[in-house]
Structure formats: C-alpha cells, structure tokens
Image (cartoon, rainbow, N blue to C red; front, side):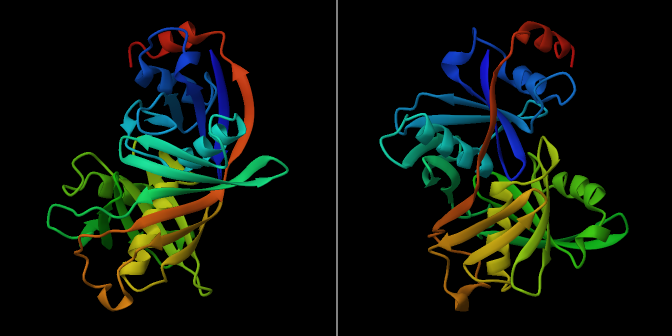
Length: 295
C-alpha cells in the first residue's frame, strides 16, 4: 500500500489516496496500525483523500485510537501541499472537503515547493446556550481551573496558565475532556501569554493525546485569546513543534468582545509549515491489521 508521511510543525500523519488502498479496509483499524510508532509507520493519525463532488478532494482523518475526527488544521495544510505539488489543482489554491465543511487552501511556494500553506477553518460555532464561547470553572486535582469551551466544527477547551512548564497538563486535560460540556470529548489547549503579545501552547488532542502541534487547537487559542481581550484578531502561537499564525477574518468588534453571541462567526485562517517526510509502501498491511483485530 502506497503512502506519504507528512507533518505540520511535527503533527504527523500518514496520507493515503483512496485508490491506493489495496481493497476495502477497516480504516479505523488501519489508522491504529499505521500510527503505531513501534510496529507501524508512526504518526498522530491517518488521512485518506477521496474524490469530492464539491471540492478538489475530500479529507477524512482518523486518530491514533481509531476514532474519526471532524477536521485537523495541520492535515489541511499538508493536504494543500499534497494537491498543489502533485498537480491535482490548476494553481496554488485548493478546495478541501471535511466532515466540518468546506475549506480553502493556499500554498506559499519556494522553488516550486509548498513550504508553508494557509487554510480556512470555520469561525466558532454557536454552542447550545447560544454563545460562541462558554467560560466555566471546575476543580481538577485540587486546582480551580478556569476554562472556556468552544466549537470550531470540533470541540475545544482552552485554559490560560501562568507557566506551562510547571502545569499538570495531562491530568487536567484528562478531566476536562471528560467534563459534561463535552459528551464526545475535546481537544484541550493550555496557553501561556508572553510579554511580546505572542502565546505558547501545549495541546492534548482528543483520540491522540498530547501532540507537537494542533492547527485547529491553535485557532481555538486565537479565538479565546481575542474574546477575552488577550490579543488582536491576528495571533502568533508557539507550539512544541513549531510556530503558526492565526488571523480571524470577520472577528467581532473589540467593543463587543464580551458579547460571545453572534450570528456571524467569520473565518479563521491558519498559516504554518507543511513538510513531506517521505513516500513509502507498506508490504505487510494484513499483518499490521491482525495486530489490532482483538483491540
């Protein structure tokens, strides 16, 4: 089975075009198998590119645990690179369909290669209580944790902290992802504001655990930072694997930041690096899948 290993800021995926699959496979189990860093290729998940009736390609994403995700910002960056460099699109732009909707991608080329890309993600969606973002406080491991819930087509929970290096990220993320506000779990972002107006973040992804980067998580950080008055509509975020930039096109006016209800959420633009590591071929698909039959 042919595949391409790609990453955005260290958030790595195994990419497969649908016609590369040898036959009809259980894609959830295939994701678990290829993502295994000891017995498989090693990745944060599997991306399958399919034909689309409304875009240049449909991107489906499975996490390490086999669950299917609605979208992934870094996978969108890499898919944009994939489509442009393999001439699946006519120029340096691409349209990509996901479970969360339609997205636009733009490649930034150097010597004919897409070194960075910029992709659109939906602005924050209204939650059940009619607001973009829902601040709440909960107690975890003896700490009172102020957090903000929001949805970008997938669920997020953002927590501001003073010092990332000393914060109990894993136990707090586990507890927050299981909060009643998130019946299907959530990506949890821990954010440290810097004196220069930028942010540092660690992100624990639903279905994959802590990753070096998360594109939609960076967008969630940008939205909550803006709504709480911590930054402007353009934000630079340093993740463990690299730095990305997010701008909120159509953000509500500064004077309305505390009014989290709106009918127009605008569009988020994520810009970051996208890298193809190598192209390869799996010759032992059946034996890999067999390892996960009983899991």
